[in-house]
Image (cartoon, rainbow, N blue to C red; front, side, top):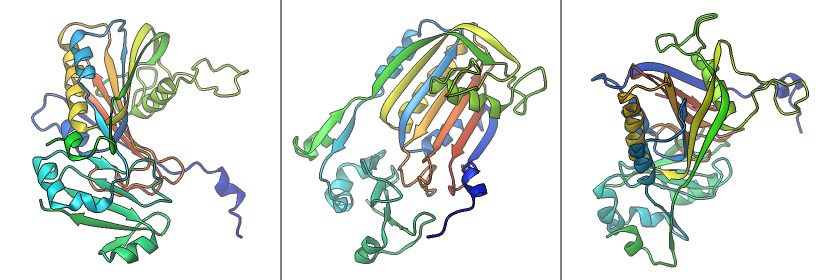
Length: 323
């Protein structure tokens, strides 16, 4: 058994972070297209500084996220049956993903809304299926793509086989939160004037994971502190939605967050963060995704008061660069 050099063990796993700037009302803005291309989402969070009470329109949008369904003991071949294709795939926007499987160990499948079925399987299953595919970047697997051509789920599947689930929604108010100072036209930031997009991304990760920003020498968990320059806000509103959330619902939420600035607000910016399933076979569009050390595939919008936005897209080791 070979042992990797100590230097390699100390290396942090490679990751990719792509950032772009745009304006939400520009005719050529691709913010909605990037959301639509990221099909499988397990958690959505938005953070609004200087906000204590959520507007009713945002509450209604959150309540309208809708149900998703867990179907047990479903054979993959049923997804390419003509009856299923006629009932769901041809009607558009049908999303399906294998549940409780590990992308780097198990056979997994994903049905995209365009009707394409993505399979990530081990060598034995690949040879047994007899389909045409290509070698995976991960664990020596093969990935096959099969394009299917061309009632409700509850009536299509038996009640013993399908379970309707509702996303979990949590609200919290963060008190005395140190927030980085940002300028919409400065992605790289300016010394003593504003923080960069990378600094914001790191800070937001700490906030969403409830990591202390106190930088206390006695802390055994973290000595991280908010980047400079920063400002203290008395309160910030944080909402997190956990479940199977389709892109169309995220686009609706993003639009309402843009409308939040329709009336004067104290906040200069807000954020919308979306995490993809760690064990999804794909990240954006049909780009292959692997778990490796963390399974990261996520994106974050920073929406400014003037409706400029930053879009940050991140994936982990070996994944293709986000679009």
